[in-house]
Length: 442
Image 1 (cartoon, rainbow, N blue to C red):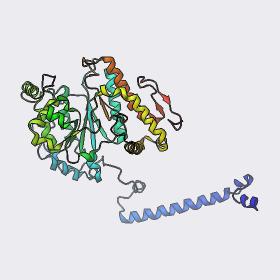
Image 2: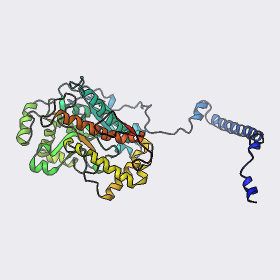
Image 3: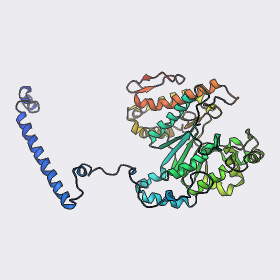
């Protein structure tokens, strides 16, 4: 009985093709006939409803619903873009920006759908318009840009790279402020503009900006309030990486901020004023970091409530205190992956954030959220000047070069792992090796 029952589910190989062929052909005709009839009925109904606009292409696209923002239409109703007096450059202040931006979003509802509008970020970065003097400078600029592109691709962020001076007076660290203003006007759909200096490396590719944390603030920079108000220190904050909300308050701040630089009427005097307030300021002229410190101290009531000084994670991390520990951090993350089976599972790059959130949760439970075992979010190579090569005399170019290689490869490993490879040596950028299945527990 057992063998006869089993034979019901195991057709004889000799009969399987010959005896099934007629049945398959008949089933095929029935399927095609039924599908044709159904299509004819749909066609007749749609033609009856609107005989002038229905086509076969319409039927094929009938189920193609909205897929993100609509990039192929711009309503004819006038917006702030039609105002001939609107200027992207500093000079004439932008007024009533919040309502103008709100009206634009109403005319473009696909950009304002759901909660995504509150979290839409445009990363902005850039470099000089000329070839780097440092022989390896352009190579480093390319790798530094690739690092930011990788992060934005993984997190679904927009990115804009600029290599021209929007204001010929605004050079050096002042070059970003005309760009930030123009970016706000060019991207009303973006709630946040995220400036990242070209010499900063994003070294935790899974970390997600905690934007909900900043819902009551309009500017976020790395810093410490006690160092700012008690010590009035130049290192109390860093303006090389910042988040600024796309709103009228921010445009007002940018106008005031930039007025203390070369775009303003008296930058030399502002340098002296800043130096008298900030005793450890080394640069004699007016710089943007000193200007922000000045505003927070001297105009505290006007600006401070909307500025968040972040110190719980490395929105800016000084490279010299980070790079020597990257090998140890890598080993720590591999230990976590050995403990959690699911973190070793191969997966598509598009779902990397799911595993990143899982890893963050596990790290919090383990109590290593703030320890040196976790990846620094941003490693900033302040003073290294990769393009010009004119680094700060406090350290050698070899130290800068090795540090950048380690940070870039540390970040790149997090990307390459999704492609099945890894840099075994953080100081060797050209060497990669394939990963075995179930890495690192293979």
